[in-house]
Image (cartoon, rainbow, N blue to C red; front, side):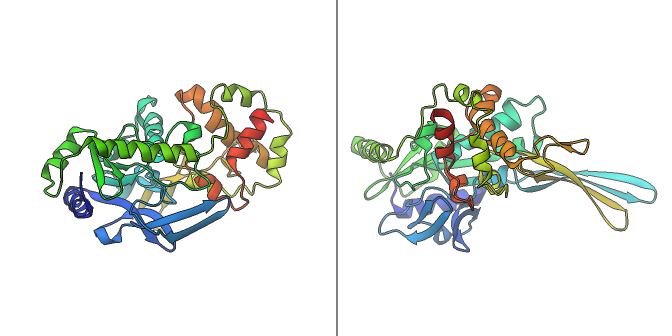
Length: 358
């Protein structure tokens, strides 16, 4: 068990060894960013979310009073733009400089949905990949994760529908649960145990603390609506590939790519060459891409998905059907970010329910 001062001590201990990435307030948003001071954490704020609705308010009490930031750990493990290689020409010879990733991140305050998203990215870039990504691998092996159990939800949360939350069940070094007057600190790895051994401001945990944790999580889980049954969902959706409902969605979808940018599991990217005007230097850059972009499915100047509804179908089916075949799990973790940040207010929970059960 630790109190607020113990939490502060833990933060600064982690800061000595890692670049701490944690929720903080920036431009009216809760975002993951590099946080150097404990006072810069977004403790005591809460996010209010709905379809095409976002606001941040001061909470009446408590510290971990929000759900998750607007961005996700993906922004650091699989950054929007990454230089892979630089080529220079000098005195008639070429020199190649490969990108080296030496950062050591501590992700401080990761919720159950985002932990599940990291596990999905692990499968994509490492475990189910015959050519594991060296950049992702380097960052992932060095990363220290402090997870936090949610005690609050927004109207867009559906982690229980996807079976990813709200309780954190693995994949962390340390786990924090905020109780009435303290923080329950649990260890999930040897690195986590070593970090706790360095803490001076800690107390012995009692059985009543775990009982309080269970009560809080049960109360939260019971308050979140379940939108559809995951059992047989992929097969139900495969049977709706030719449904006219896709065309109804097209009337609302702007194909703006916002949903894929905020999604913690969307991983598609493009590779571009960026050349200097003097033609003496060229950089190979990896950039986030989106299946909603017109160029995404263009092959030999022909776009395989010319209509917006075909692109939306690709995205939804990838999350809830193709991914099951490909990775033996859903590609959606129920964080609800795509609902909040869709400018048209399209609610993927409702679209899945209408398609699968309508």
